[in-house]
Amino acid sequence: MTKLTLREEWEARVADFRASGKTAKAWCDEHQLKLHQLWYWVRKIESTRLSKSSGKALSPQWVRLPMEGPSSHDALTLKVGNVALEVRPGIDLAFLADVIKVLKAL
Image 1 (cartoon, rainbow, N blue to C red):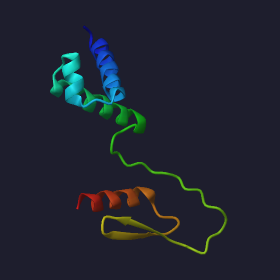
Image 2 (image 1 turned 90 degrees about the vertical axis):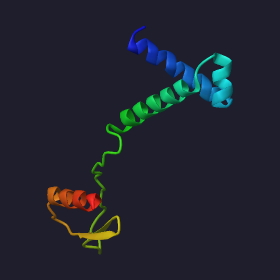
Image 3 (image 1 turned 120 degrees about the vertical axis):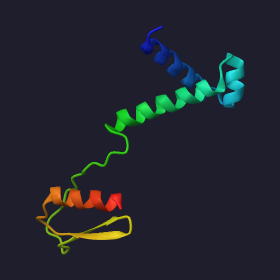
Image 4 (image 1 turned 135 degrees about the horizontal axis):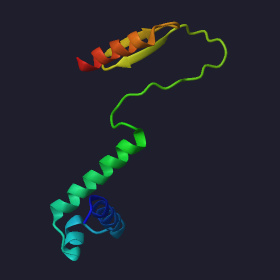
């Protein structure tokens, strides 16, 4: 059995388990499968889906926020943990990213 065939078989099994409404133990008993195998594949399939949907799991990404017209606010406050950063227009984004990485690591 190829890895792809095995994965497809377990994806179908996990989908069947989810749709059954049964407990994992009852479903495994009915299908003569080991409980630890089911949970292994549930985690494996779900973690792959998460990483595919986001590009990289738990990886921060920059998001462009459109501004409409002039604002009376000339600064943006970002909170990283218990630290607040005041960001003003024209800041070097690479520098800001480095500062945020350091703060998150503390």
